[in-house]
Length: 196
Image 1: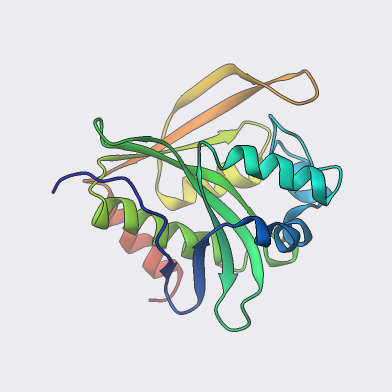
Image 2 (image 1 turned 135 degrees about the horizontal axis):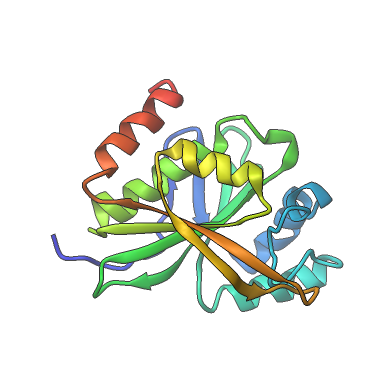
């Protein structure tokens, strides 16, 4: 299979739908994730928490220059409940990063993250032909570290003092990956978790 970059198509499983994020989605995204619980453990470490809606719009508009960002919605009521992105898209080396995932805190533990990861990983492995998916997590974000490990991703190491944060401190980034030959087992594990 020839590797191709993801094109921003809608991804859905009948429960959730991932649409490419637009500027019109930003107010809903702000309502969903602009909470201290989301940003308190390193999410948005470079840019920091948004001060207000206009600041979030500015942050995400800049972010869209280098990332393919999805708005995650519940199919039942079209409610925007979170976001996730593709980044570091390297077709030549068949490598891509999945990250910047955040959900409305009231829905944490609801199965949204594994459902979104199943759709996104399925797209890049099965549709686009990538050989490696990287997932980086701020070392302070123990909740996300646990969630990524539970996906079946392999821990590759920690990049120390990797990025300067908005507050002037530096963060360590824990790196995980999933390879194409590991994808069938990861996929099966996600399907079992989701009762499919």
